[in-house]
Image (cartoon, rainbow, N blue to C red; front, side):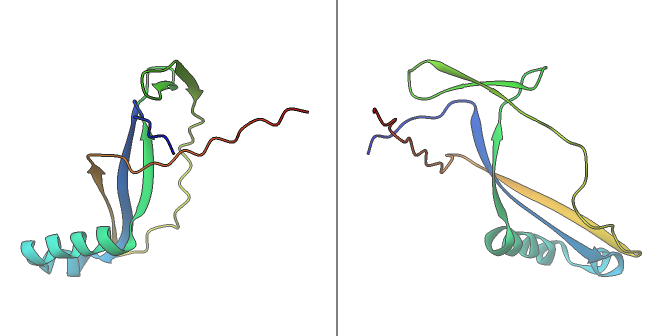
Length: 111
């Protein structure tokens, strides 16, 4: 298996949760920090973020090879349920220094 360096791509761990406002404002700073760390560790999703240009057209390259042009379709539509009364939605993420990405290339069959 060959390793490739991916340019123009970063990885984040992302989580969200709804929390009672009163509970949030009564939480000690250290406990809040521990809460976020625990959520990132156990309940986060792996998300890959492509670097973007003004037109949302992405250029990234694999190794020292030819650049690959990509296009992103972006929607502002929120897929999460409505926030209940007296709740606050926490959205937290952590950028990872080295993306853990695996690319699988299928060889074209020749008939």
